[in-house]
Image (cartoon, rainbow, N blue to C red; front, top):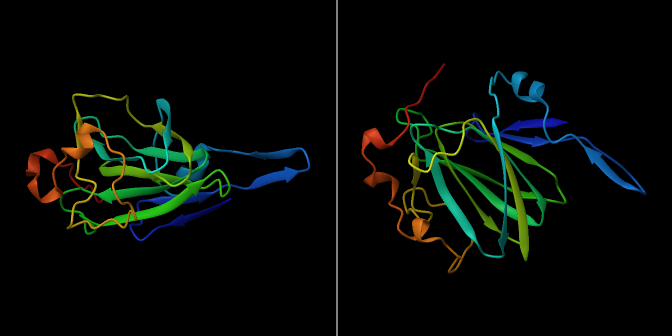
Length: 186
């Protein structure tokens, strides 16, 4: 298993060890010590799964009063996964990192609380699974505009399939300070 800190070092890309033979394969999709060894103390309380069709773009979402750290992976298909640092006072505020997650590469991404998160489906369908550190709270959920020109995520998406919430999201510069999480340097 290899863990890589991305350009925003709080976000991790995890490459699990895969044991395969002519019967198929086996891998661990989560081991608490992976994160503990990186100095991360997080307890996951909820697992989610979504299935989406090609060119669906979900995001960029976050919860303000119940911020969620996430451990995400794709068990079918492929997505471009994106994490945007929206923590006030962070040295990487407004920056993003991305990685392709797929059933072939079996990579996982750890996204800490305080980040907006989204993904775009690259294959005909994708099954996206993720662990969350707090329970989903629709009253706390917010969305940053997926096409925010200041963040400038390279989605490589023309006319993505969006929810109404994502179509109506605002650019990050339009959020007041009390609508954004605060950076904690630990």
